[in-house]
Length: 442
Image 1 (cartoon, rainbow, N blue to C red):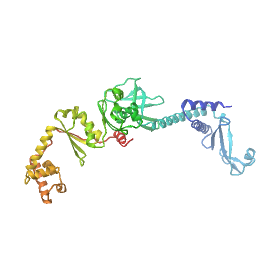
Image 2: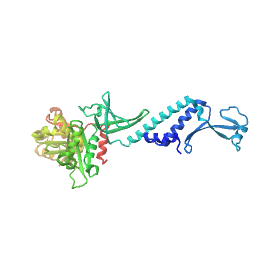
Image 3: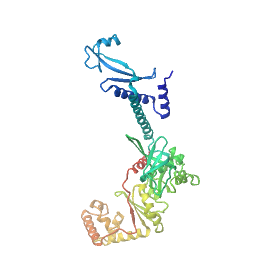
Image 4: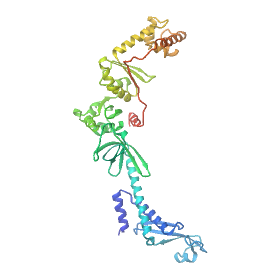
């Protein structure tokens, strides 16, 4: 027959979701603490839960000696033989104690230790549960507000949605449902701290994964995401199946899938583009809906000059540079966007600057132009080895050309065309690290 104590342990185990052995260990520690409080620290005590009897047993151990000098930890041989006929000098004899002797104070101490252990065990269970859910989307209820942060009730525990992880201009009231990304789970002495985010790029990726079966089944893969939360995002996708259009899969029938994500993000505009292994093609896709005329790649600077029709320049750059800025983040390249007229004028000015150099005629200017040196500034930034690739160029000529180009640049004070807008990829922060991992196929 199950004892009352065992029945209580099983009930608490079910209600709190804790293992029975965790509760039993907490109970043993509590009783041991109560015993020490009653009898003092000098006793050698051992506490065990007897599952057969369903009760806690407390034993005090004493060494068998000829002459007792400390009655708390020693017992005479004659007394030991009465308890155990096989006792010998030097043995450690365990004697069962009466737990009823602990009294009210000891019982209260035991209760406090048990409650403390229960809280610790519950915190450990919550931490173990949520640490494996980092990177998932979770639903909760806005419970209260603390210095800009929203404390979210997740049922078994609470989580924090910091102000910096909230979408700008997004507001919540107490009791509102909140859907967010589990950004981080930390363990503290007071319990686990769960940090949520609605601005992380992976929140957008996870929303698409929940809406698009082809992503969940790994047929369509999200390669990269760039966000300006609450305003606009770009997401690059590819398909492992040539028969599956990755963009179409994410958009859904009549835009149903992408609209579900937009609605969750309170109207954030989302551009879904096709990823391409060719960096120039990827850039063209990323700058959509603008039309691209020409892309000039500079591998050494990891930058590209993108030429667009004059009437498409504002579209390519976007409001306050948003479109080109997101395209730069998405692709990881520095982008220099310019209009066609400005580009052609720059070519003419560059060719003219070559002709203005001492010792450069039309043939030499054409040879330099075909060799990739399209202006005096290009020559000023070149090395002798670079120029030796030009037909008929010698070391001496190369040195003289570079010297003349530097002098020309200093006298004319070459400047960037004001119509150009250059966007550099911002330094990656900690949030972007998860997105770069996605580009590796995670």
